[in-house]
Length: 418
Image (cartoon, rainbow, N blue to C red; front, side, top):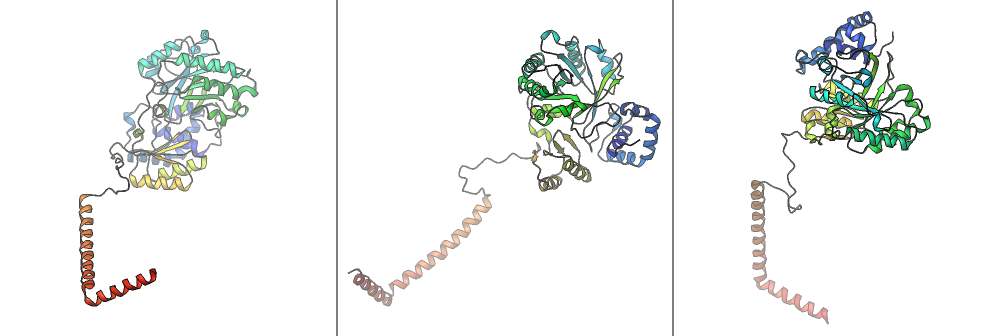
């Protein structure tokens, strides 16, 4: 079986994080015996990951399993998405399941208020009660931009007054939507929702060629992709991947959709001040750099540099966040990013002093007292030498010979004036 090095490394991370071969096989859609052989062949890599975690001070035993948040790679969390089709969920049991770190809830579908999901209010209230980070999605079957805008306004109304740690998604996958209208419908939906939400676009891999994904990305913040294959598409940039519709989770009878988030989405939502959160001060990225937008190649280059310096880093959509880091490491990372033509945005740590206020007279340099006194002493010495020269000139002018020269010059000037 062909399997990429990147995927092998993710499997090694999962093993180091506490999952056994059988659990990894279930998550990855692989045979358990194959996973055991793969782990045996890559035991050295597992040890290297373990050593890195120890060096960075991470204690996996203190975290719920499976722990898949490795500081040296993009943040990764597991979650589910549910609707009324899962029936009445036992959310206490879900919250106790260590494989669930977030939930995306269906708010409804279509353009009528009667189509709000029957379990929406209960699912949202239960997640909030139990502290499960939550997002939402709206299933669309709009075939025209006007209908899509109606759906977007209804979604906005249903979300009002609530708070979401994860994005609120436009789910566009209904085959009745003409391909020629899909992009326009997506843009109309997002525009109708307004600017208060951290918006995402959801669909499956084979759908994506029928839309202008670049245009859609200009109107939303993130992409959620469904691809259930053992070797899913790697060319479509996504922050969250729905990898199966046949998952099993405590508290839910029957099958459930399961997802991996490859970005620390809650941090990005709070930083953006959307989904019911007030915008946070950028000092949340204490001693870090935000680099980008980055392409796939530049992303790998910057990630490799961060790893060589033992710096934590993670993807944030089209950007990569590097740090916390020392001033020297920040300079090195920033220099490399600038050499690649990438934008670099740095944030001051709370301990660093604020920028001094602009002096009232910007032409006068801001100097310490000792510097001022030193300059005054130098000026005083120059003044003494000037006075000495003036005194010598005055003495020279008082000389009789000098007086005769001045009289002749005066007479010559008078003659020239005639």
